[in-house]
Length: 460
Image (cartoon, rainbow, N blue to C red; front, side, top):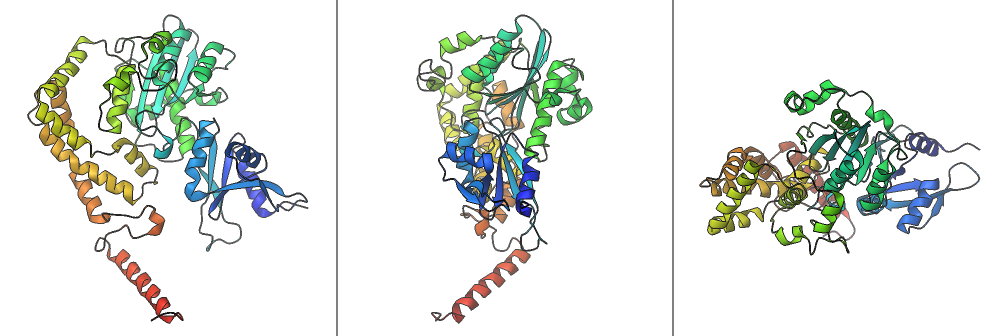
């Protein structure tokens, strides 16, 4: 007895994602079948059921509601699983035969973008490491904020230095060009000390780089200023990371366009044991923030500020000029108590602009997200005005570079109601008068609902 057409479609898609748990959309649920269902049932404590599949034995199955899937996915990703999200790609009402489905996104520990799965005060880094004999290239990317950093290790003990860099960024996922058996200490450090998912099975990502595409994306200047060519270890790591993000996210990566290339001369080198002993961002015993240097210093008012402060603590500056610039900015704010208080009050209303923008890129932003973006934009002009009298070079630079985004703010305010529903599926989040076509459709829907109510037996 052959499998049903739906199960044949499932197998065709699953075979493309054999090492992933496939969340297969059926109506209002994501279903998992066979071994995926057994795994999800065990890890999520879900009831394992069965489904007729055209064979004598029913296919093991378990599922989760699509509208609350994020919490289940977060638990699986935290355990190191990779999730493939398979959606219906055509309207079931218009489909001729079986509804078309395809994987629209892959979620791994290093490619999470959902705010509910992330720590707002900490970056979620994906890392790629390219090994080239006595040197190595590293690239780190947080796709939820579009932050990308890269460096090269070319001298000294590659194992110790690479572990120190990994400790500074604490990535959730590491892609390696070399087999874990070639660098067992690095593998053990990433897996056991950092709790990172270590993947050494994607060697094809580290083939010769598409250097021209990288130059177009990040700008030729950043590569030329550091003498980085197509075969440089850092470039090969960067290219592998971009390939992997494009492959898993299946969205336009135009928003990932800024690269920070750093060298040992920029930041103070701290080995792994020194970091642990200083308890910079987590304590030795409990691995918590409370009791650390970060805990003492963190009085930030925004999620973006919290992440930046963590980076500054993890990567202390060594340039005297850069240190003095920061100190002058801090002194001016400390001395200007009233101005500082005003700034703090304004910043308390600022949302996580970096991650809001990523939601928009992924087409997952709802009406509340857009109103949160509007609220943040409405604060930018007052912040810039508050910085108007600042004279320290760093604060003056921030003031001059700050775009008030007034045109975008005005557009959102004109389009989105002040109290939008939680889900866009509920409708009613577009302001009346913004679109005549939408107004007409709403009027038709309202009239239809009123007609049905008046014609019902209980209608008045």
